Amino acid sequence: MNSKITKTVSMLLAVPALAGAAVLLAASQPASAGPEHRSLTGTWLVTVQQIDCKALTNIGMPFQSFLTFGRDGTLIETTANTGFAPGQRGPGHGFWERTRDEDFRAVSEAFIIFTTPAHGMVPEFDTGRQRIDQSIEYAGGDHFHADAAITFTDPSGTVLRSGCASATGTRLE
Image 1 (cartoon, rainbow, N blue to C red):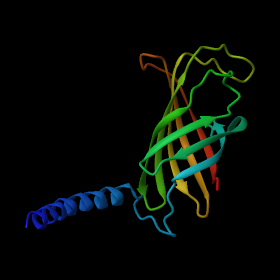
Image 2 (cartoon, rainbow, N blue to C red):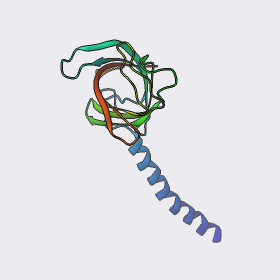
Image 3 (tube, rainbow, N blue to C red):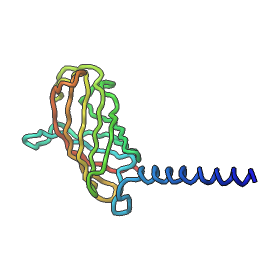
Image 4 (cartoon, helix red, strand yellow):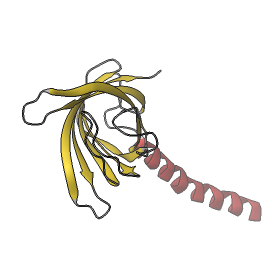
């Protein structure tokens, strides 16, 4: 008799736990995740072109970055932008979210660890942070297009300067 009560109690306790796990699993899935609504989840090779925000003309040469979008909405980013001195900029960390069917927003921030003076076409970079706020449009297959607003701040959060960029991404598989 005692064994039957123990089994019944165990089953009654397991049902809410399983239901809770199902809710957590469903919440971690991207909205509308299906063949026609692919998620950004995974790692992407991104080609970035800096743009003059007013004239909408290209500035400098394109460079590449990696963006890794986690299933839980986290974002990790690293760049090969040669405007930064080696070791000057840390990796970007942030979040991403779906805004509409094939549209997303991604925000990341990275530390600028030390100051470098302007040289050639490269402006001065001051110690602080770089924030990248992207509007991403899924382009079908394993490609996306993004437009970004970039802001540089000092350690106290005062804006030093801002800029714009466009980018194309290809999923690594």
